[in-house]
Image (tube, rainbow, N blue to C red; front, side, top):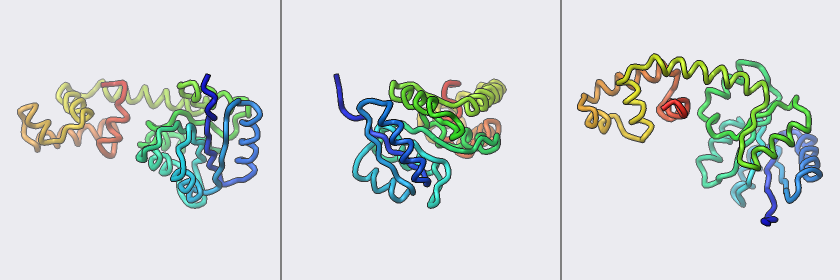
Length: 213
């Protein structure tokens, strides 16, 4: 049996939160080891020294945004899972999270209003390779998925073909050559895809359409 410690980095600007969470995890999760950071600068320094199995990240930090830190983690060589932990349950804020490019990188999201048992359940689920999204996130995520599926259904066959080729990493010129169309025509299809799927760029477009193409 592998007894290697399950390393967790807790990133929250309140020491009482990080200390309490670390004690809770140590008491209930065997072979776990927690470090904490009360600002993103400290979190970055810790990440430079080692990779963690799980990053528990608050949405709002005094020196930056938690979602931006999530992107930084994913753009580095770190492969650990990420659990977003936030006090915000407002629909417009959660929708902002769901529509951000960072959402695809999350293994879970949980409200700070959840009880401690649910926090442990989320960590255990992620530790076992699953995802865990609290009810408020799951409800809006399901609604968002339904909306995306509806938008995808109204795409033309040409638009879907361009989308699939974009997902494979092809450039507009390469897609134009593949489809025997002009680059300007492909750019028009791209623009329509961004508008219909409400995406700002190709990365967000492809992330939103995962599971649909």
